[in-house]
Image (cartoon, one colour):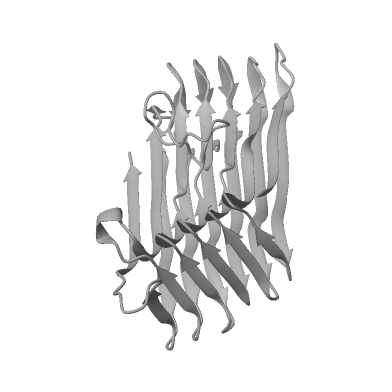
Length: 361
């Protein structure tokens, strides 16, 4: 039995301001892209029986790409390139109301593998006296498996997972060079040979937020695996931000170069009391009960701007990285852990890992 809801989005938007050869008062390229993603599987009061695998999955994948180009000009009074993208949504699997699932194996997955890229690309050869090149991106994701009043019986493993991690269309988490795909990739670039004058700015800001949860609620869940019972919440966003100037580009005095990356996320497994969790007891076959919440967030901020002094004023450069990551496994009292064979002992492994990697240069 295979029940899967998938939302795949591949959106590309490219915008640019007009090119002019002489002076101009205002010239701007502005792009705003909003993407809403909601997908789910809801099983209520059902009985599902299969001799082989039972698979229930809710998956978000794909990418949104926004490119905004500042015009190619000679001399401009005001010139700007702004790109802003927002992605938000939910991926969830909900099983409730006296549902029974019997299978050779049981696999339940709620996943958000989406990616967002924003590029604001500046002028090529020219002078901007009071312009800005700004790229901003926000991703908000809620990913969850919710189980209540449910009985599951499997001959082999029961795997229950909620996951947030950027992937390509083939399900890979890294590119050909081994670099992790970014959930947010935000770039502001001053073009080759240009000069951003006094009062101009170059900025890139990214914000990743949301939650990944597995919830066993109520007091009437009984999950019995013939081999291993695995419950896992995995949250691994990667945020890349860069504010850089191209070859031969100069950022003048009294201008600002700014890069910021923010992550605010929760990763949880919650098990209410009076639930029963059972699995095999053969250690050699890695049987047992494994419950884990794991966060592995990464932020990479890059700044590279070549400054030139004009009139003695100063150029301001700033980079900021912030991570708020809460991870917990909450198992209420009176939860029963047992082997699926009477008078046997079962291994129970409970883990909460919170890892964060930050770099700024």
